[in-house]
Image (cartoon, rainbow, N blue to C red):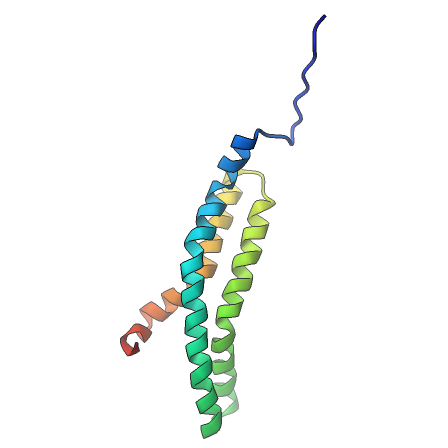
Length: 122
């Protein structure tokens, strides 16, 4: 009596699934401090924007400051979206690229903040 074993193309071992998810897990963990810095930066800009509105600014400056104060939320939304999209990809290449995109989404605002000289004011 012989038994047949059928392998499904879409199924993988639990260990292999964890290994495939590892780049996204690492990007998710490394992205959390960057997101905290981005939200902190947005909070500081929002506090400054309040005073700029009290002084009376032009429409373009006001729009720019509002977008800067919302930029931390944009980073968070893109971070979560890229993590989700990365979990839906099956190949290593795409998972690695979406992991890089996740880190860039989380770190875009803090890196911009660092290279534009805002840390000198803190």
